[in-house]
Image 1 (cartoon, rainbow, N blue to C red):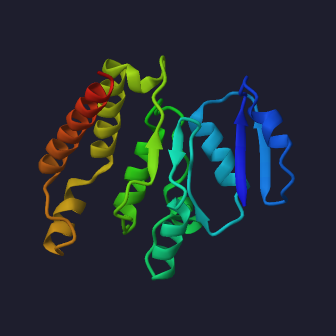
Image 2: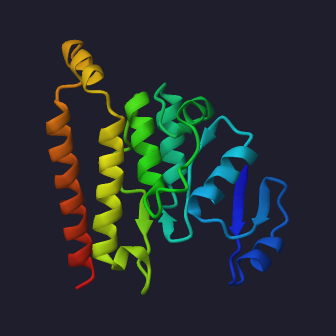
Length: 193
């Protein structure tokens, strides 16, 4: 199934979608409630066992799903399973602009995952998008990092280190998180030159 959540769009998206006659396509129009709300409606409406997300400013390579399905068929849990999604709850609407990162960090803490070692999602940068406002990006990324670290129980990390499932202390995790934010923002800045 392909679920499209029309989150109050004002462009021609809805009229273009209505021209497609395919029973696998399900379109739901809602009042603009933000990205987290739109994703949560999609989670609620989805019937399949595996979930993946595509935002309006993202592009997929033509073989993205095929490669992910191949990894799943080999026994790995890659796309988000309904069970995993249910276990970590919904996208947090108060986590403005990085709700996906917050959600996937919660998933990564609770579930094993594998990576398809190919770039499969491309990001569209348009004038006025959040990714062009580096100060705002830095602020929201640091907020997500701080929120995630606040949720991490230090005792649980130490227990995981003893069991060799986590090799880093909470401080090391914090430093790596902040370093990744700096690396990410530097890359965006260079791409915008």
